[in-house]
Length: 329
Image 1 (cartoon, rainbow, N blue to C red):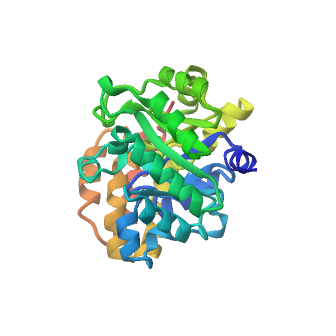
Image 2: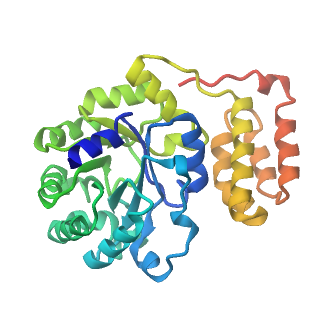
């Protein structure tokens, strides 16, 4: 029964990978405007923090967000299980973060540090699995370092403990987000487990997604940073890998209009001051690939008034050379 439920949740073969401070309520909503069936995942939710404060906007969702997975981080089995039980009313799936590479996470024995402690990781999975009635997944990497490529054995141990679904980022922790994702290695994991596996890392276009699937033999792809500045990417990938339809990437004009919607939604969600400041991290992904883009972004980050930001964005499109730009994959 669980396998059938998982297959239903991942039937689009594309998911939005969790990104801390990125895949918030607003970005998930924007992705869902384009793709009605992809699995979307929340940003990483600390089980320690959620235990202290339950009334937080990080857990909010809209009715149309399903299928949605809520990702938890931590290393205390009972605490993570309690948080998973609390989130069950919001989630279609619970995901446990075993792949985050940042120092402040791994120093706390969370994230990718769990790949060095598979016994504890199995305890976490078993405890959570015992406490929830929805599918459980984990996200991890190839290993902590290149000399510790334990992802195949680790995936087998996660399956033995009760995991229903795996997402694997095809880099090591020591690589962080540098270098190139090694999709071919995922094929070995796929041969050694019986549960669905999604490949993650460098899936930045429909063609990259297709190549990733060919090399990894994975059941689907998880899109992370590729969706920044282009929430339509998951839909474009779905159309390409499922139907062979290639949809052109958005023009600059379309990207600017999406940025304006992104800003409006963040302001509605957080208030004008917090919403505008939160959105600044997205400017480099929306406003790029034309002469003077860096200067314009530098001007944008100094503006706090939403209407004045819109005026500045509208001026960008008045330059006929910029307005005619078309981006390619």
